[in-house]
Length: 244
Length: 244
DNA sequence: CGGCAACTTGAAATAATTCAAAAGTAGTGG
DNA sequence: CCACTACTTTTGAATTATTTCAAGTTGCCG
Image (cartoon, rainbow over all chains, first blue to last red; front, top):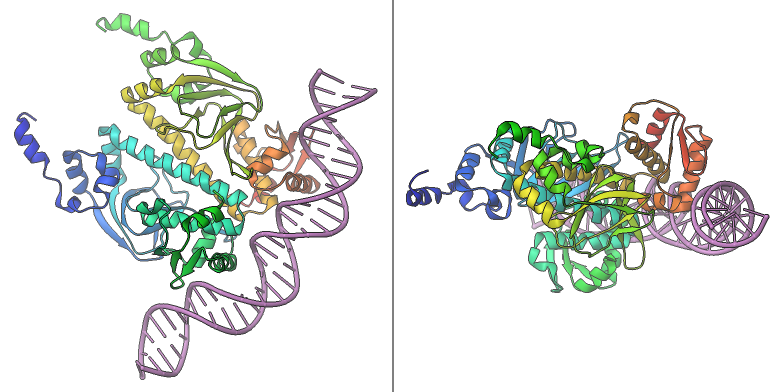
C-alpha cells in the first residue's frame, strides 16, 4: 500500500463478474472497496432457481447468504396445520438471509425464476469485521424491511380485502418500476405472483382476491391485459382504494 | 492516554447514573466501553412518561433516541379514517427510535408509566461512528424486531381471534418474565394493556377480545384474578390454543 | 359513595370463507 | 393445429367468524 497512483490503477480493477451486476451499486456490494469486492467475488457463486424452488428451508442452517440479482423471492411462515403466510417479498438487489442467527425461522421460495450471488457465512462475517460500512448497509436494509413489515401489519390487521388488494398492486408496481412512485397513469406490469400467492400475502383466500380484482376492474381503476397482466388506469384512485 | 495503570483506574469509574441501570448490560450500553459510557451518560437525561403519554409522533423529527428503563411502549400506525394498529411493543431495555431516517413513520405511546434514558441524535451518530459494536448491537435488535413483526404477520393474517388472544398472552408472559419461557404453570401477571389495546394489537375488536378471554377461562386454561390480572393455569394448553 | 371508564354480554348485520362447479389458460404430444 | 390434461381463475350460494350496535355490569379513583 505504498504507491498511491499504482494502487488507484490496481483498485479500479473491479471484478469482471461484478461489472455489469445489478447489486454492484444499489446492493450491499456498493459499500465495499475494490479490494473487498475482489475478495468477495472470488468466493461467490451465481445460483439459478426456478420458479417455486425452495431456496431456504425452516430450521435450515444459515450457512449461506446471497444478493438477489433478478427475480422475486417470497418469505413464508408455515403453521403446523398447513396454514401459511407470506411475511416478506424481496426483489433485486436485496440481501437474502438472516445474519447472526444459527437457523432460519422461515422459508424462502422463488416466486419467479431467480438468480442470486451466493457466498458462505464465513465470508460475510469476515467482511463485516473488516468493514463497518457493510454492517451499516445491512442494518439499513433491515430497518427498511421492518418499516415495510409494519406497514403490512397495519394492512393485515385493519384493512378490508378490497383495500388489501389495492395496496398490494401498488406495492408491486413500485417495486417492479421504482420510477412509478408518482401518479403516472396507464402503467402496466406482469404480476410476479399467482392469485394463490397474493392471497397468501394478504391473509385472505384466492376467491376473495379474485372478487376484489374484479371490483377494481369494474370501477375502472385497473384493467387486465391478461390474468397476470395488470394495467393501472387510475393511480390516484388506486391509492384512494388502498386507504393509505 | 499515557499511563496505563491510571487509565485503568480511571476507566473503571462507570458513571453513577449507569451503575444500577437496567439497560447497562442487557441494552445497547452493554457494548460501550467506560469512556464511551461516560461520554453518553453526560449527554443523557432520564425522562418519565405517564401512561398514555405520546412519546413520538408521526412525522416527528427523529431528533432524540432512548433506552427504555422501565415500562411498556406501544408503537402504533394510524389510518386517515382513524383505524389504528399496534405494530410493535417494546420493553426494557429496548432501544427506542428509528435511526438513519429523518422522520418517524409511526407513533410511540406509553402503555404504562415509562422511564427512558434519552439522548440526542448527534450523540448516537457520534458513538456509532466510533463503535462498530454499537451499530452491531442495534442491528441485532432490529433483526429481532423484524423476526417478531413477521411472527405477528402470521398471527394477523392466519390466526383466528381465539388463537390471537392466546398468542398475545404468551407474548406478554414471556416478556414480563423471561424466565417463564418454560412450561411452568400457575404463573400470573398483570396485563400492561387494556382490552382496547389488546384488540388494537391483534387486529380485532375489544368485544372479541373479551369473548375469547372468556372462552379461555371457561376451558380452564387461564383464570382472571382481576380484569387485568391473568393467571395461566395450563401453559401447554395455552400454547396449543395459540396454534404456534 | 358517586360517577366515569373499562369490560362483558346478547342479538342482528356483514365481510369473508367454504364448498362446488364452471370457465379460462398453458403446456404436451399426436 | 387441435385435442388432451392439468392448473389457475372466476363465479355462485350457503355458512361462519367477526363486527356492529345497544345495553348492561363491573371496577376503580377521587
